[in-house]
Length: 119
Image (cartoon, rainbow, N blue to C red; front, side, top):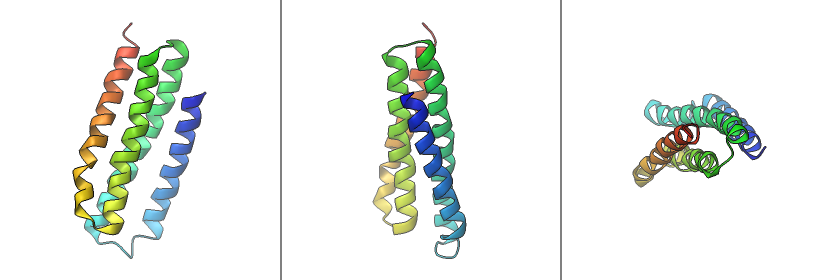
C-alpha cells in the first residue's frame, strides 16, 4: 500500500505542476526554461507511474529490492524533477549539476525492480 500512496501523491503533484507550467509559467519563462520545466514534469510522470509497478511487484515478491526500487524512484523524482523545476523558475544554473544524481536514482530504481523480479 505504501507505494500506491506514494505513487498517487507523486502523480497528483506531477499533474498539478504540469498544469501550473502550462498555464502560469508559459508567459513568465523563456521557451528554453519552459522546456526544462516540461522535462521535469515528463520524468516525474514516468516515475510516478513506475511506483505503481513497484507496488505490484512488492506485493507479489516481498523483499528489500522492490522496496529499494520504490525509494530510488521517489528520490529520483525529488532530485531530478525537483532540480529541473527549481532551475527553470530561478535560473540558478548550479542546480543542473545535481540533476544527474536524480537520473542515477531513476536508473538504479529500474535495475532494482528488474532484480526484484529475477528471483
